[in-house]
Each structure stands twice: as C-alpha cells, then as structure tokens.
Image (cartoon, rainbow, N blue to C red):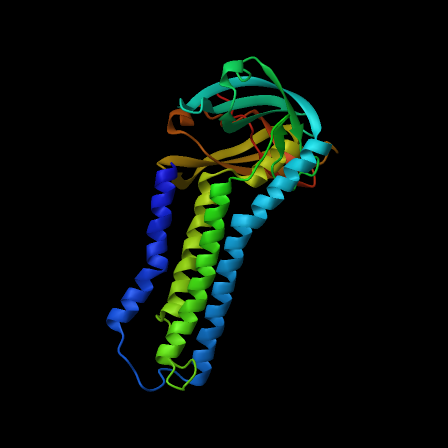
Length: 322
C-alpha cells in the first residue's frame, strides 16, 4: 500500500513539475518581444499567484496543521473524554512484523455513542503488545469518546499514546521547503530569462509558471475526490458517534446507476419520526457488494441514525438482510 502511494505520488509530481517545463522548453521559441498585452499578462500573473498560494497553503494545512490539531484533540480526549466499555466483536490480523513483534490489526468494536445508542465501529491500528491478547473477540476494552464531535478523531482507545514520526516530519518539512523553493525559483528563473525589459508580458497559459500550478491544482482535486470516495466518510462518522436512532419506513429502494469497482450504488428513500415526534423523509446512498444486492430489503422497517440538528442527514449503520 505504501509502495503504491509513493509510486503514484512520484508519478503525479512528474506531471506537475518537470513535465510542464520539458514541454515548454522543447516547443517554445525565444521571443525578443512581448507575447501578450499588459492586461492579459497581469491576469495570468495574478491567477498563477493565487494558484500557487492555494497549493502551498493546502500542503501546509494537510502536512502540518491537521497533524498538530489531531494531536491536540487526542490530548483533550485523554483529559476530558467520555468513557465507554467497548466489546470486541471481530478481529483480523492484517500484518505481523516479526522483527519488532508488532501486529497491524483490524477490529470491530461495539459500544454506546454520545447519545447512549449502541453502535459498531471498525478501526485499524498497531498492537505493540500482541502477546497480551487484549484484542481477541469477546474481550472488553475502554474507549474515550470526543465530547466535541466536530473535531476528529471521534474516539480513542483508553491509554492510547501519540507521538510524531520524526522521519515522516523531516520528509514533510523537506518537501514543503522544496515546493516553496521551486515556486520562487520558477518565477525568478523565467523572469530573468524571458522578460527582456517587458516585465511579465512573456506569460502564456502554457507557460510553466501557470501551467505547472494548474497541474498541481488538478492533482489536489483528484486527491480530494479519491479521499472522499474511498476513505472514511466524516459526515457519516459524525452521525454515527453523535446521532440518534429511529425505525424508518422504506419508501423506495433503487440503483442510482453509479458503480464503484463494479459495485452498484443504492439509494434508499425512507420516512421516520425524530425524537420530537416530527415526521421526516430522507435519502441515503450506499455502495453495496454485488453478492449482497439480492438481500437488500425493498420494503418494511429499517434502522437508521440521524443528525438531530439536520434530520435529513441519515445513515444506515447496519444493512439488514431479507
């Protein structure tokens, strides 16, 4: 997994940094006169500055700010978290490191959320003491819920400790410095080489100063789509950890026509009453394994969880079978 992520990161960096420069250097001619009007050139310049500012802010936020916020949040949970007893209902060994005697495991926990609703949640982490067999099926562990639910993580295992990966942090710092130096160098090099006393009038849409930034912007856009589709859904987790439950009546179940890895997306339309007795109609979309498609109920009751402040936002935590 790490190898594939590294490979694709380097692959995208190639198209963001050397590729636009190589294309420009091999296809462009040296002009001793302006290529654009003053207005068009300054429009390109402003757009490029906005793009690069966004890229740098995005990197700093994702590489440093979010990490620091998560560490602070965990410290707050340790001090002020709400304790729950969690039962281990599933266990899977993902990887065993014989040298360090550490297991990478996946477990499913069953415990009460902030509204005292019984929920199930899956988590993956490193078990540094596998010989103690703390996480076998049937055991009970302590978890601490985050009382400030908009912040992640929403819960931690009691006794969980956090520390920065020093090698990872050094690499992040190096990459951020490299990116800032690259952007500054990009402007400095091409301005001194191509301005010819005409200022920024050498800028075009395909110029590396602008086009390289656009490629980074597209990479960030693709990254956010991938994270949103294939990794955890924060909105659903917020409802899971702070929402209320209800028995909903199924109005309609159908396929949306969207597939992910050849697995269809199903849309559920349901009606239910919230804890105040108000009637609501809501929809929920979920990717369903093809093997389980025939067992999805088309009518009757189904258990849902909803956001009490926005009851139209619902999840179906456990998919029932007919």
